Image 1 (spheres, rainbow, N blue to C red):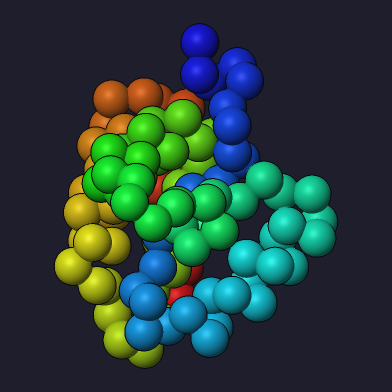
Image 2 (cartoon, rainbow, N blue to C red):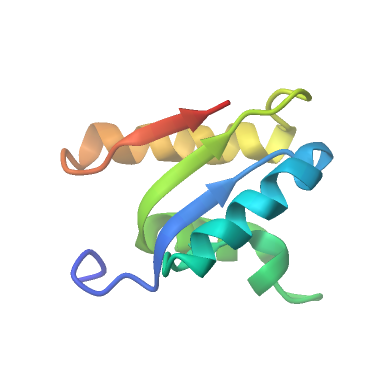
Length: 99
């Protein structure tokens, strides 16, 4: 059901320390019509964010793992594992690292 009408085209996983590089990427994608899930655009204070991240990973059409100068952050590592797990269980999905 979620694959036909995903809320987001792309779940963007990134290390917060690389935000200055990731923000322009996310904006450029959004300007081109890509529905991007970026945590600080959609998560709200007080929201159980681990659950929200899992939900949005599961319902996004694709996941991009942006690897910057600071490497993978601790939560980003979990998101990358979730992306790889999805790739192994759903053939049409691909996990693509960006550097």
